[in-house]
Amino acid sequence: MGEAGGAGLAAAGGVNGMGGGRRRGRALALVALGAACVASVMPGGALAETIAEPSRLAQAPRSDGVRLTVAPTIAAAPASQVPFAIRIAPADAMPRNSFLRVRGLPPTVSLSDGYAIAPGSWAVPLHALSGLALIVPVGAAGRSEIGISLVGEDGTLLAEARSILLVEPSAASAAPREQPAQPAQPAPPRGPLLTPADRETAEKLVARGEREIEQGQVAVARNFFLRAAQIGLARAALLLAATYDPRELARWGVRGVQPNVGEARKWYERARELGAPEAEERLARLGAG
Image (cartoon, rainbow, N blue to C red; front, side, top):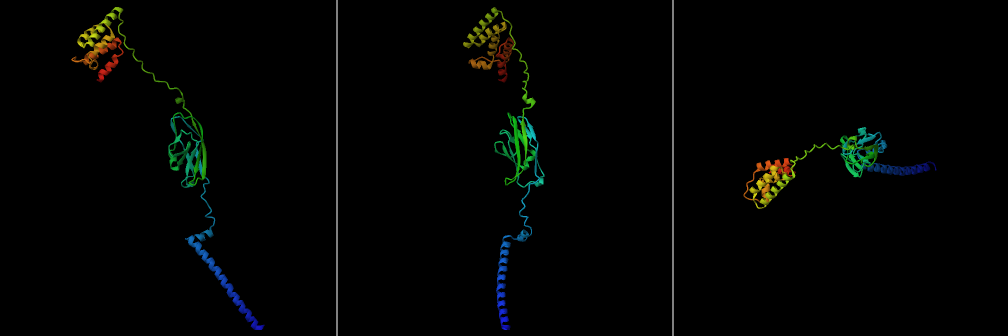
């Protein structure tokens, strides 16, 4: 074959080499095109960062180390409001938009902030913790186990704690309250003890005066009532005062008789001294009028 054969082989090799170069060029172009497409989706050099630091995107926010602190037992009395002190530490480890969930409260007990999501269950924003309190109503009593959970915005449980709410009446409220001593009411004054004869005479005089009242003879009736009151009959003094009382005269429908509040008061007071129970009310009404 000599030189001619060598030249033919060289030519064939050149042709083959040119074909292999074209194929490699096309492969490199495809790789470059794919990289450009990825770069267009991930602008700003994110592709290089992803290749250089693939672990950065895999790391999720961690809540390790977040702790809830609450008193193991909270004592309260009915009809009271007690602090519900919950501490979260460290504050800089809390994920954004997290909140507290409180469960196990008696249905009648409420919180000073937050909102009820079910009987005995409350959701509380973190900004409300500084002044949070338990509101215990009248009649509440017993022992309840409370669960407190720190929850992320996606529902992830970040930390939890437990406490016991113990509602017991205080010694002062449990003991029966003594009613304040009421001032002794003075016994109504008793009139003079009338003899049977005096009482009979006075009753007859009163009956005569009532008949005169029925006939509209008030001035005549006063004389009979006056004599019976002087004997000591309480009812007679009451009726005599009524003949001067403008309200009683109006109630009787009497016309042409001038009332006299001073005389009415004087004889009502005398009727009270003699033991007429209605005299006190009449005097009060007379003063109000």
